[in-house]
Amino acid sequence: MFLAWLTSVAFGVVSAIVPVVNAEVYVLVSQVSAVAGIVPVAVGVGIGQTVGKCLLFLGVRRGRRFRFVREHRARSRVEPRGRLRQAWHDAIQALLRLVGTKRWGLPITLLAAVVGFPPLYAVALLAGATTMKLRYFAPIVLVGRVTRFLLVAYGVGVLPFW
Image 1 (tube, rainbow, N blue to C red):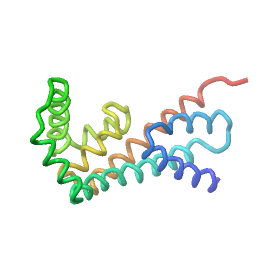
Image 2: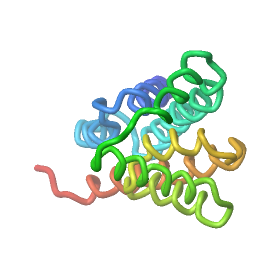
Image 3: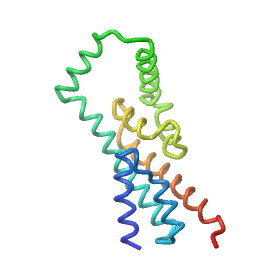
Image 4: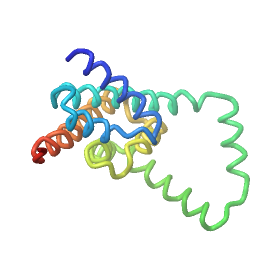
């Protein structure tokens, strides 16, 4: 059981950082194949996802200090934008403002962690660019991801397999 939990944590970290690696599919397959119980797999993947999202959060937070990032930001402020690029920029700025506020930042993060909309990957990156504290971000992501994976795992558990 410990090996299944440890594998789940490792898979969660990888799936949090690499978007094409799907944690929900891992939870589904682990339950259909009855490799381990529902709780160790769901909690393990949730912990791994939280660690991975915190790495993304910190990567953005600390990445702003790099010289090449500062130079790119200075260049992008000067370059003219087309309509589509300007609309995309405005949408990102609006999300940054919402995620960065005390009132909406944590509820948006919890919604992203449980439901998946807005994508948690994007929310983790945006939260790292705001003033949100990691000590608030990490527990919200952990609770949301464990809840999500328990719901996925228990959803498979009620299906009749012969």
